[in-house]
Length: 342
Image 1 (cartoon, rainbow, N blue to C red):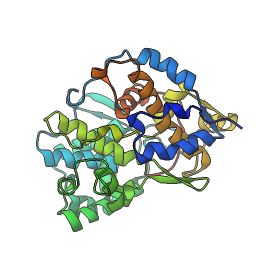
Image 2 (cartoon, rainbow, N blue to C red):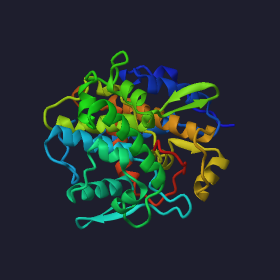
Image 3 (cartoon, one colour):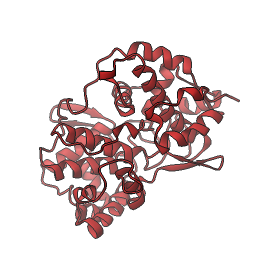
Image 4 (spheres, one colour):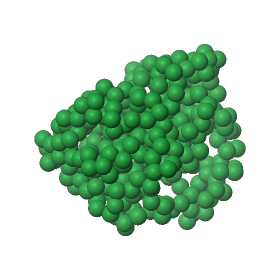
């Protein structure tokens, strides 16, 4: 049996002031399939802390930007995160890849490139009415790439579900939904991160581990953080509490953490990942991987902040992106789980 992590005294910064980070602690402390090394976290922080991280709102525009109109930005960002899951074929292990405007993209960037291509071709992908009725064949054409994008049926289903809610309650507009929420992730039930999973079940990313409810909320957090980041370029603050966002538990960050010796796996888990054997959604292995990812991002951010000046403090999503960008196209095997949550 492996020990999870240790060091409760290290979990006191404001980055832990949210239900997601708090909910993963029992899992990490009681994990049996992996261990998180506090020593390795400190070692990585000792060099990564001195890297340059763009200030919020200063990063270059994405090649997939949709212009300055806020409703278009909101619609595209939330559409992307409705569909942001499963980019590796579960049988062959091949990644989904696309060539667009002379550039080769892989993984989620390939999906975003395909959506951008469709939007520029006149497909009304930002309309909730389109999402409510889109079918598999239409999506197959939009996402034509190196392989058929995985889980096409599930992609159509989540779009139909989300689109139906948007049409029924918000005139088919994500912008109207955002405007109806408090400008915060958490606001006594009216925050964006509270209402998103409550109103749109496809974002309700929770698991149960030994009777304990674990909040992960990967796509809900990623979508809202991405929107906050983009609107900040225009001087608009989507939320007043961005520090309450955690890392986004996916397939890629565990690869980074294993390479950096922050994660060590039980032999049976290592073997399953290396063989490309599917790890079931909500299994102990899967929940421990995701919980440990959120924990490790937060701890690494804390350790880096201890070495950075007050004017250059980081929050968890910034460190998450630094790791994801470096490893998302790696040839190293990551775990495979069939789910619409990541």
